[in-house]
Amino acid sequence: MASPIRIMPLGDSITRGYGAGISNESSFRKTLRQLLADDGYGIDFVGSQTSGFFADNQHEGRNGWYAGHDTATNNVLDHIADWMAATPADIVLVHLGTNDILHNDEDANEVSDIMDVIFVANPDATVVLALIINAQACRPEITTYNSNLNAMAIARIASGDDIIVVDMENGAGIDYSSGDMADGLHPSPIGYDKMATNWYPAVVQAISQQRVQPAIESLSIAGASISLQLGRLEPGSPIVVERTDSLTPPAWTNAGTFTPSAVAANWTGMLQTNWSQGFYRLATDN
Image (tube, rainbow, N blue to C red; front, side, top):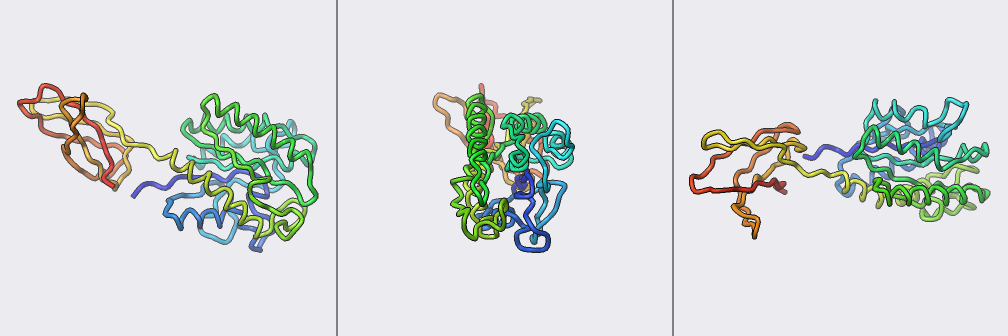
């Protein structure tokens, strides 16, 4: 059984869920988790906050918080390093900027700075970055901010950063003038379900990018035996050790199958007297 992918929903009250004690409190997180579970994806929402009417309801969505701020302490940029250390994440879902816009202090570069911290904490992380939803009374500054977010993300992707952009403003199909919004800024349960559906394909893509392959870390020979030190294993998931005499062309054969009980393991096989050289690789038995 593969370890679950750790996902941190990161944002403000839209991520936390609006309205204590009502269905809105689950935000998009409950429906998104159910969509992933229904399709067999093993995930674990992580974070120091909990809200919503479902079991795996951890997150880092905080009411009224800014992406960044020069003086206010309730900003994500000043705290994300601590959160990533306390509850490490493989994937971070970012929906940030609404409160910054409300106070005329929005800056896409602050979100870029947040991603810098995320990638320092976990260089292999994937950030799924939302172009944030608009408001019930359309705010052009949100559209402008999203354009800046998108340009920033495109530049970072071109430089090799693992970022996936999701257009929440227009791509989720939210009708801002209808029952999709609970108030001026927060979605209703219907709107949150639309957000979840829009997150889903990007999260699936991020999960596929997070699945790492097992690796042969080192090889040693002692007498008639060969020993491989293996890493990046999934405990409980069978591994096949394959061997070929040549790579031109290869003819891989099964040299042994085992099920590791830890993320690292040692495999030992026997050398044949007629082998002049050999190449080894690992494959998952599924």
